[in-house]
Length: 195
Image (cartoon, rainbow, N blue to C red; front, side, top):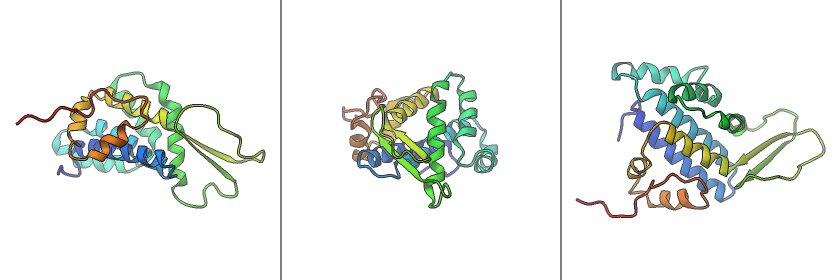
C-alpha cells in the first residue's frame, strides 16, 4: 500500500469514491453526492501533489488540509484547472453544485429553510418540490461521470493504468460501467494479464 502522502494514494481513493458514488446513486442512497464530492476532491489533490518533490510532500499535504482548501471544491478546482492547463470551465457549475452537498453531511443545515433533494441519473427537468421558499440540491450522475472522465484526461492518466490498479476488485468494474454514458475508454481490460 502507498504511503498516505503518496499522490497515488489520492488517485486510488478518488476512483474508489467515484465508483462507490455510482453504486450509491444507482441504488438511490442520498450519501451519493458526498461520495462524489470526495472523489473530485481526491482527484484534484492528486494533481496538486503529483509533481511535488518528496522532501516537500508532507508539507504540501498539510497545506491542502487547511483553508482555503480542506474540503472546499471551489478552491481546489481553481488550482486544478490552472495546473492542467486545459479549459474545463464548462464544469464550473457542476463543481459549485457538488460543493453545496458538503453542507448537507450534518443535520440542521440550512437552518429554518426547507430543503429539497433531487438525485437524478440523467440531465433533465425535475419537479418543483414546493411553492414555498426552499433550498434546492440537485445532483445529476451524468454530469459527474462526464466531469470525472474529463478530469482523468486532464491529468493525463491512462484509464487502463487506473483500472489496473483496481483489477482485483471486480465489483468496481460492474458499478463503473452500469448506465455510464461518459465512460473512460479501456479503463478495465477484458483480456487476461500475461505473466
